[in-house]
Length: 517
Ligand code: NAD
Image 1 (tube, rainbow, N blue to C red):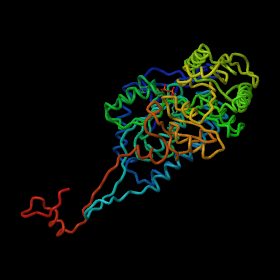
Image 2: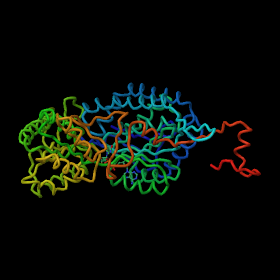
Image 3: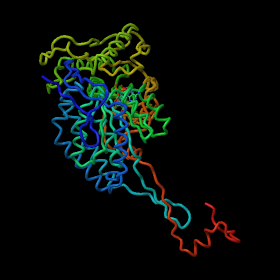
Image 4: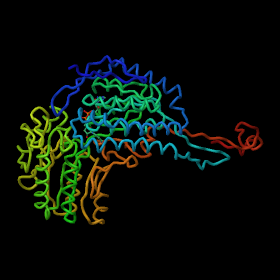
């Protein structure tokens, strides 16, 4: 059977790309189920020119805000209609279980609705500038902006960036991950059908070092908004800096999760399992360093092990709605996880459960794990003392279903362990003691701290790194909308002609009382 071949989305229609063809693999089966054309540097040039032409036409950039808000609401409505296809594509290209995608993808309509609302309620500040002056501030779109997205939540992250960028009136070029380009192409079609004019949303699949590099280096790109690994974020930031374009980067993490004696252990175990193993641990905020008060450590570890093993037993095909966890995205990612676990074992870490690639048949549905990149949900702990702190996996993002568990005796130790990282994205605290929750959350180095919950994400709630390794700027909320605009200050002199003649003639004869600035 011929495999489908997907094209670029450019100026409101599918168009051929001239870059290297991308094979799209299903990571659960190893099958190349589609191909996608990639954008060459010439295609990037064309896309930027067409996106600027769309911007300058004013159809979107200068459309009345209520018109843009109505279109964003229609995007939400049409996205609702496209869910079955979008969900199937996400499952096939990411390998994430359909259960996860059915929960995540429908929630994306909230971003379009939220930014439509922001447009409808936004007020223009009137400033207390001295003099007979009416000084107001308005916000204008930046121009053509580039959005670079990763493989793990292709649609979620695209939508988190697209909704505020479009609300502000920009033209957008989205470069999805080369591993998962397909759902973004379908999303662009949906936005077009909802009324986003031609050339305002463009999707250029391609490899980072070719398509991505050409796009972020383009001198006419006014802002780059990337979500990806810290290495990519640094490389892109250096290029963007040369053009003095604006930059937002959502990068890596190594999230701590502290469980205090005063926590409900069953709730904490459920929270750890979710925070650690959803998306097979391939999330930037995955709780990977589990820091537990020694008094409850044996009890918690026993229950967590039972839960983790039950997840492993219920793994199967991602298309099976009973399957709990999918594969890793690629052979490369599997190699990385294996290397980090091997390193930990060599440095005396103990594997409590898991620790291996899965190769047999699924107990759930007979899926042949050896064809995909399945890795067992895994718990590691120190063999003695704090030996786990010497491992690479304590410091480096594994992006897989592997957690390390370590004990502590005092609150100060817990905070020190949590902050023992260059990252500062997500963090979790489990305690029923509210005073403790406040006290500790204030001292944790993280852009987002959850107490007695995990992974909560709302369009209104800022999401960003607190340290450079985890990124600059943030997604969500009014700030993300503002970051897609430039401010314009307009100062109107409303003094009468007589008043202006008296006060505003700097070079007048005997002009002692005229103003300067
Ligand atoms: P990645 O860094 O490999 O790629 C991300 C994107 O950047 C891809 O589209 C890639 O093609 C592009 N890219 C890479 N190098 C580039 C370059 N030099 N120029 C232009 N584009 C380039 O990341 P990934 O493996 O797809 O995703 C996993 C990473 O993303 C993890 O580190 C994870 O923590 C991070 N992430 C962060 C967040 C967050 O909100 N902070 C969310 C999801 C994922």
